[in-house]
Image (cartoon, rainbow, N blue to C red):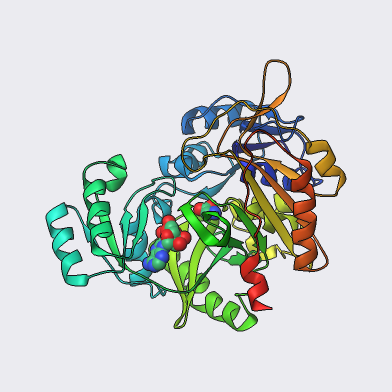
Length: 420
Ligand code: AMP
Ligand code: GLY
């Protein structure tokens, strides 16, 4: 079948890379795509209706959506209305990511473990609550804010400023409602799962690195690297996560009548009191997907098609025992302002080391030269017999690649070694 993949980042390159290994996959249409897969056919359509029309006109057998924005805009509804097969939650179910208040209410009603939070629609009430609650506290804009809408405030002044900025419109409509949430302490882990509304099947665990600099210092980013599996998720913890997070999620989806045939991402804090949900995403994580999919031995196209068709029960996901590591190479200045258009050298050499180089913010300039085109530029990913070997293999690839001002963390997976 021909496949339509929506999105153009590192996560989507990893999805494309894995899907094109399937004997079920023929042509790959990629909207908008990136230079990572030269054989993919670029698609310019970028709205739910236009993409659905494109899929219909081109007889697409399966559509996979990477980013959350189009899911929240109702791309799944647009496709299903036309009887087209697509993986993802519908617009209503996508609010599990699109509205933190909606997600919190879902978690509370269905008994999923999470921090307590209060929701506010005006600054004076929020500020009064803040003063009573005290710091530390977490301030969250309700809507989609590209990962920038969360402030973990260690003092009241920071929290007050975050509340004021939200209501002053720093995140537009996404900040019209604000959550004030208790601060949790622990190590984070990402659990991704396929869910078709009847069955839920987790992918293996992973861990992101949200801060820009080594030692988890500096500002939050979209993610500077990831590894899988995450040793913080022990077999005992997996049992608790399955019972208290995944199964309760499934029951909640059914009880609320949500149409969820897609990927659910549980962002967890592993606290002394057990796993607590920080957030839901209704899609694959970036860069977790790059590390996790490198370890998937089963057919991804079959698994995604089964998810869309409500046949997930028949799928068995098989995992390589070898750990995988993804190191994100970023532009100087990211997550703040950064330059674009700088020539990238050494990808072919990196690939010779056995690493897979996933493109994120790249483009070909007029002369056919690959240049930087975003904050997160590449995700260099490798497996190894041990995690140490996987880390070394990934960095061996990284070392081959350069451009003016390239930045990356040198300590991806450091928390895993602290467990050993
Ligand atoms: P979110 O978008 O809700 O996942 O928040 C982004 C990041 O903020 C998370 O990955 C955590 O590092 C941090 N965070 C969110 N909620 C909390 C919380 N309740 N306690 C401590 N840290 C949090
Ligand atoms: N890596 C975090 C996210 O995809 O939201």
